[in-house]
Length: 257
Ligand SMILES: Nc1ncnc2c1ncn2[C@@H]1O[C@H](COP(=O)(O)OP(=O)(O)O)[C@@H](O)[C@H]1O
Ligand SMILES: [Mg+2]
Image (tube, rainbow, N blue to C red):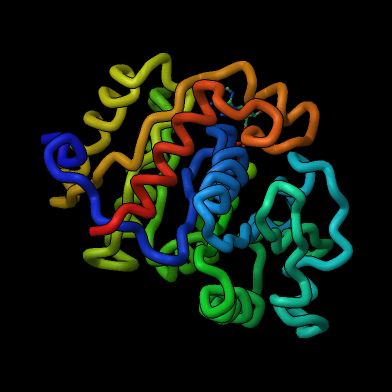
């Protein structure tokens, strides 16, 4: 009943969207750290903060973007021009915007974001998209447009039900699409695997769908420390538990099929 334990998942696609439904599960932090881990494998990676309005990525990394996704949506600059090089070895398309939350995106703006993704994929090896919390049309459309959806969940029941809802909608929006589970804030790998098993069981029973485990990330006090210091974890605390866990996920996503 736990597919990931029996068969290694194939390589993930080029556009990776990070979703959760529920906020506060570590989605933005994971998106940043995964981006840096993929970059450290020698890939050119751009992180897109699609949580317009909340601008999480720039807050966690402590910078004020002069150019952002809303300028791309408005046709002021191209996505290539708006991308900002971070000293951590990756690029960022920031989400800071006066235009409101992602859920409020009008149809034209959403279409512009969706059109930007393949353009980015043509220029970068990997595109990592941090979706905001929530399950409104914009999050759903962007999640369905990604090659691989990574659903971040914790053992908390509210997180599990929200992760299940994300998987259910993704199954409708993109039948047969590639969705995998990342368990964050786990006490250890066994507890994390148990959380994934509960979610995989529900998906298998009610959605008739296999959702492999992308990996388990342990709760680690260094995460809070890096966010407080507005530095990426792999720069400030390379080798800590959470860093090793995210690097393992990055390796498995890049693995040859
Ligand atoms: N593996 C972890 N260990 C310890 N704290 C974590 C871990 N992952 C996330 N956190 C904490 O969770 C909080 C929320 O993270 P954030 O990335 O903003 O979540 P989201 O984007 O899902 O709302 C952060 O303050 C961070 O310190
Ligand atoms: Mg966030």
